Every structure is written in C-alpha cells, then in structure tokens.
Image (cartoon, rainbow, N blue to C red; front, side, top):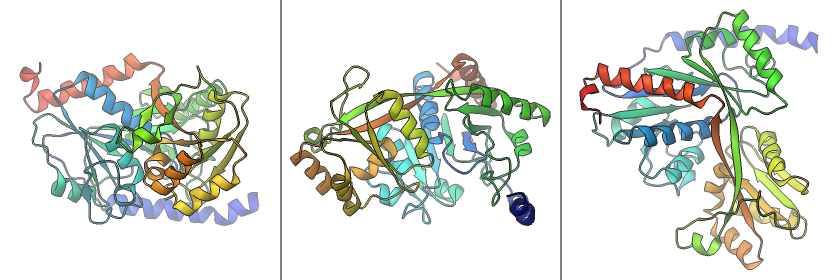
Length: 369
C-alpha cells in the first residue's frame, strides 16, 4: 500500500497544482446589494450540505421574514444545468436536479436557480428585486466565480479529512490548510461514536493554525409515510412517526446519495431491531421505472420500502411504480432529516451579526422592522 502511495503521490501534487492554477485565474464577481452565503465542503461525498442549506432557509424565514431567499446551485446532472434555469416547482428533477427540486418542493416561496455558470444563470433568471435578498450558494467553497460574504464549510464528523490526501489518492478536494479562508466550520452528523473523531480533527486544525469558529451539528430524523391517494391530489404527506408506531414486517431501504452508509445507520437508529434489507445506488441516481420494479421483486415478503427525500423527488415521478405499490398494498416511507446545532444560539448569533453588517453596508438598518 505504501508503495502505491509513493508511486502515485506526484499525481496528488499535480492535482493540487492544476487546482491552484484554475482558481488563480478566476476573478470573483460581486452580486450587488445581495448577501451571499456559501455552504460547501473540502471532501468528495456527502457531508450534509442539502439539509444544512434547508436549516439556513428555515432560520432566515423565521428571523428575517421580510427577506427574499434564493438558492443558487449548479444542478449537478440536470439536463438544464448547461443553459441555466429557474425552477417553476420541484416536480421535474430530471430537468433541474434532485437537490434543487427537493429545495423547491420544501420551500415553494424560495427562488431556486441552477446553472453550471452560476453567475450568468443568476443574472439571467433572477426575478427578485427586493433590497433585502439572501443568496445561498449551494456547494460553493470551490466556486470562486461569485464573491461571498460568508463561507460555511461542513466536515463529516465520521471522517472529517478522510485519509488526509487530495484527489486522486484521497477524498480531499483541496488541502486542509485551505480551510483558513472559511468563516465557519461545522462538523456534521455528530453521534456518540464519533465525538472523539471530532476532538482529533480539532487538534489537527489547531496544529495547522486554522483559527476559524467551529460548531457541531447532528441530524434529527423521522419517517413519513407516503399516502398514494393524497399524492394524486398533490398532497403528498401523511405523517407517521415510527418512534410511536412501528409497522410489523421488515424494511427495504434503497437510496442513491453521497453517503448511503450514513442513511442506513440513521434508518437503523429509528427502526431499532427491525430487519432492514438495503440496496445502494450511485449518487444522483435517476431511478428508471424498470429498476424500481426490480426492487419490488427482490424485497422480502411484506417488506416496507424506505428511501430519502432526495431520492423521493425522483421516485414520485414514476407513476406506474407508485400505482403498483398502491395496488399491492406496499407501504413506502421517506426518511426526513433536519439539522440541529449543538450550540445553536452561538451559530445563530453569528448569522444575525452577518445580517446586521449587510444592512448597515446597504443602508437598510434604519428600515428593519
């Protein structure tokens, strides 16, 4: 193994050099009169960006009700990513991407814009003229094209820096020392098992003199049953919390996310001793109807389907599959996840200060109600 690392180590240096060259040629552009907050990471794979973006939306909708909010995303693997688009709703994930569709479905009043060239896409499709406007740049830490007022970087508490090496030898998008340009570091997915991992990661940050405010967060999870009759009427949820009710029989979890093992562990924490079959798909998997029908054939008798919100926005577009589930009385639950910060008041004070600075800078402070 050490020999392989030695032989391929130059590739990691080459990657870092090419990354530096690309970044150094980009001159960030300011979006006038807009507060831009970036949510990103430094590793490949899922760190919980989607639920954290939703945490920010909920916070600002609660505390700054007179603000318009835009989520600006690349729209990875979306058909309209190259040309850019504004989402009319959350019902066409193949066109606009699964995560942007999930955001729009959850927050209909929030403007969601996608585009490979996010600056151009925002300029083309932005419909908000409010003087109080927050743009959340989804997966933006490596996206230097747009200036941001605040950079939040998420680190998965299970493996904050993976093996410590950059692509292709490791999972780091850029070296750990680049965290110095972040304004806030948030460890996600806290559990009793990984508390010591977070402590070790903080020691590494201290040794590298990365003096960035740190927070810790965990997931609050529950399962919601899909009601197929209401789904046809555009009412998609019937809340059933399995901490109170655990249907008899086994479960079949299927998902295509960046960190499927974490999804499985979350499902296990809710379902306890219930047997869980599972099948993992690549991140952003499209879920063709033929694949979904194969899941019906492969599941154990009387098993209940479980999937994530990110997967559900695509699964629900396959009407034939849903009709079959209804006819065969096969139940389907969606795993819903919300971010909870261990020191929420401290982090929210930071966000409140950010808004105050923005309002003073833009002459809005005296107009705040």
